[in-house]
Image 1: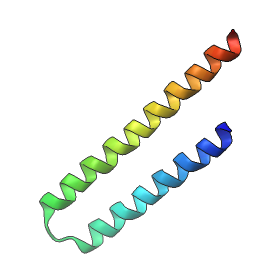
Image 2: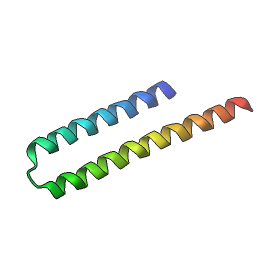
Image 3: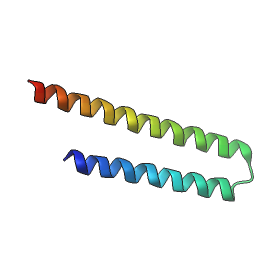
Image 4: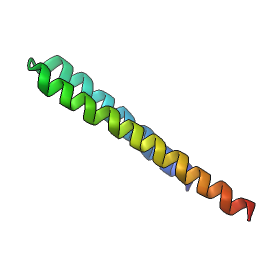
Length: 64
């Protein structure tokens, strides 16, 4: 189950990276790019935190 979740997270990160490259190439407006990059980076941080928290919960339950 965790392998599936890891695959979903990796796919989401790759998709956001692709979207960021697309935005960098196609958007001339710097403010739009900055806002998009902030959204993208905060999403990556949120995904990473969620993965760490969920793996910590799994370890805690296995320890019980």
